[in-house]
Length: 115
Image 1: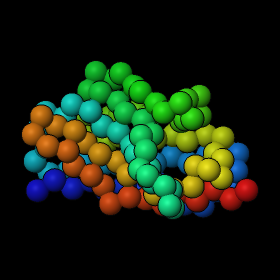
Image 2: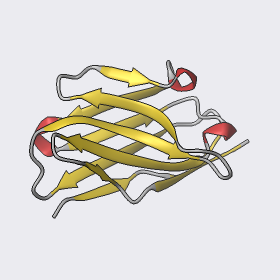
Image 3: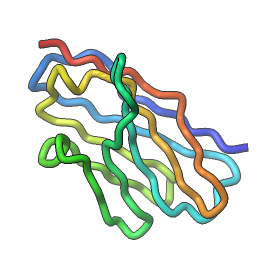
Image 4: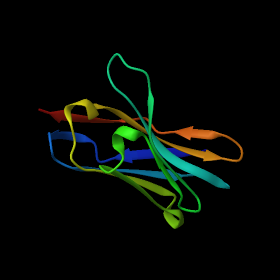
């Protein structure tokens, strides 16, 4: 059984920073990509960032320059460093792990940015 455990969410003032972590455990084989999505109230889920096993990254335009995704392959952990946070970054952030077999999702962690 595969489990993704997220941490690091919380309440922060606009302009502040947070670092999210997502640790994958269990029988995970051949991870291709790890990443983060988010869903704000009343809005569709959207891509935040992805990182491949080789370290190639991809960001949504609104996150470029402010967010940094990284991973520790040995620990099956993906991180999201979020700087210069804005009120519109308020959302539930979900991590995921894409393997050659299936995609696994975390339970989500709330990020609230006060203006």
